[in-house]
Length: 460
Image (cartoon, helix red, strand yellow):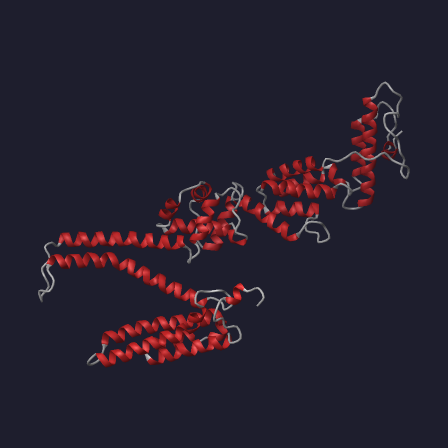
């Protein structure tokens, strides 16, 4: 007779079958729980396996004497080796159930799986479940991942699972869940928290990110800022920039395009801005042409220097080129600010010139003022207006450099007031800009980079 049958209180007779073994095991399970006494529960589970194997072997060999089909071993004696567990099959079943159900249902189901009751087999099943889920990037909500982590102790620092690897894998599962029908509401909430705007067309945005599209179609999409902002907001809600890996189910080409579009220094961002400026310039030029055609013929100027046709051509050209000129100026100012705001340890273009840029700008403004006073009779009003605009740019660059590289504490709370007052003057504005530049220079006096050689020399 099997020692497992004796432990479960069953007799070795014809009435003891597989169903009777399972009923006895379920009855004992009510008082022996794995979370209360793990050792007693493991012993009970081994007895259940031994009794079940003995009964099944007896039923398969009806012709031989009872008890010959399987070796009977009592506790402490040389027992037969336990049956080999197919951890991969068990893991596949658990992964399929976890993908299709929520956390409460998964937790209740896991407690009923006899394969997880053995402390000997559970570590192998734990690793197999993680591998099965990692291979397919299934959509798993955070509560489901937390349930699996608690069941298999994935976050145990004493285990064989790297916490950083587990965090990356869980991040992929969360992305897949947000992109599924079950996580659509959560994706909309994350989008609202990050952008303060409702995601009005989630299906349209996700369809655009899932389907491969040529680059020119994406460039045309950037003409509408709302559509471009929706795509970028979805990538932010998916936390794409955390590891810059393509979220499950999205087209890699689409993700690469929009991630490059978010970089102001990338060629795609520059092309998009040029396309917007060109489209708006075409529209303004057509309006000017329509206005000129409606007022034709235009009279010549009072001094007779320009005819009506020449005036019309100038109006259309100025209206058409004004928007591209403003865009080029704004793009140049933005690149100048990013160049000056870069941290000192980052490799940048012309690092020595970047350090001396503000004094050189102030010297250029001083030279322009001196030349205008020497060459212009009377008060050079136009030159003074131009210098006021140039001083505003110089002050902006100096303030942004100090504030970004040294922090608000070094810049001072009254920096904005000094900026506003200096804009109304000329010479004091140069002094304020040089003072802010000197503060930044003093703050980085031991880390100034006059070349990028150290950025490429690992020995320094």
